[in-house]
Image 1 (cartoon, one colour):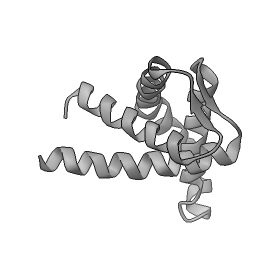
Image 2 (cartoon, helix red, strand yellow):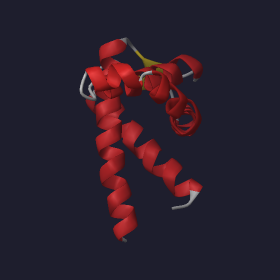
Image 3 (tube, rainbow, N blue to C red):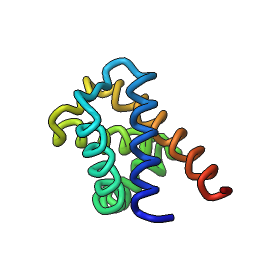
Image 4 (tube, one colour):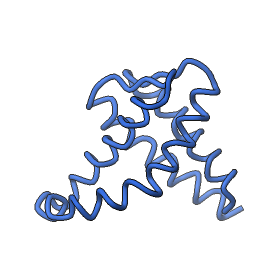
Length: 113
């Protein structure tokens, strides 16, 4: 899948999360596009490192800590991107779940097509 298509899927997943989850918001489409780009980069480069560092916690929690790690990545993007708001841990937590599920579904649709 091309970079542009992955970015578009992530932007759509973020838009759905903003629509569903109170506490997530964006000022304009540029902020959403930038947030999707940065979230993709954070997930590609920073998340694997943090995954290995948090592996003992992940094993002890039977994988639940991965949800916290995903929430942290979304919170980081909210902190770095002006115009993209993540208002607290629970917004990031549920937003990360929605983004993951929607992106999974969209990626399956795109690969099947």
